[in-house]
Image 1 (cartoon, rainbow over the protein chains, first blue to last red):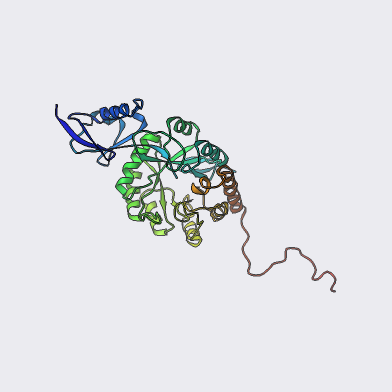
Image 2 (cartoon, helix red, strand yellow):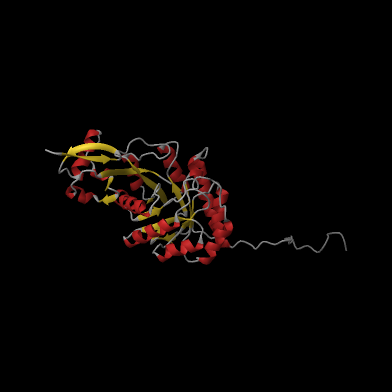
Length: 75
Length: 266
């Protein structure tokens, strides 16, 4: 199985080719010890918003920059 | 105080409160209650996991975030940190999904030291977001022409600054704010940023501004909960003063007691 290189919030990751954004989020949350909660974050690839329902259809490409955002307090 | 309408919504309070930089979630929660605010601002941060709460830029852990969502308060997410319209549009789309609201406090910063908005990028982003169904609350300056352009592209309200964000300088250009109010009499106007003391809020409300939005003046107070209540009262007092009609200033004294000259001099 070939691998591709992506970044998540600026950190490089090697993942299997064909991985979807939804699979990546599940993996990242599991690795971080967080519950599988797709609604806890919003996602973007290469600065383009990817809505939650489309994550499963979004196959990551080599060099993609994935961003995940979660709520904070704000002014 | 009677409700006021903004963005097709009736609000019981003209005080919008920011949620950043409080000593603890408990203090924030108590300050929100004391403020009487119906609208609170929130943000998004590039991170995977919401975790600890408290302090500036704190993540909203799930329980606290759920409390905010269940509180009945209107959440107003911001696009803090964005320097281009494109960034702000993407962040707004993410905020809509996370917070479940089409309201967005649109911030596009043009200068790092003053956090002054970039009017060109702001207008571009506002146009695209309003077309996409957002209710845009644009953080802008008191520049009348920029404000008109924001209205032209679909904004239904404006949020001119009183002073740079977090500076606590109060209304540094009251003349400009008065002109804006006079030239846009039917547009909801909210003074956003720079307010330092309850007196500043009274001043803005007495000018006829529809509401004020502030954060640091409360969160950085020695007693944020008491300060939140102080602003609650100030906003109400300022609005009541405006509605009651403030007397015209006179250059010279005008006796209020209608005596007949000096009491013992015939």
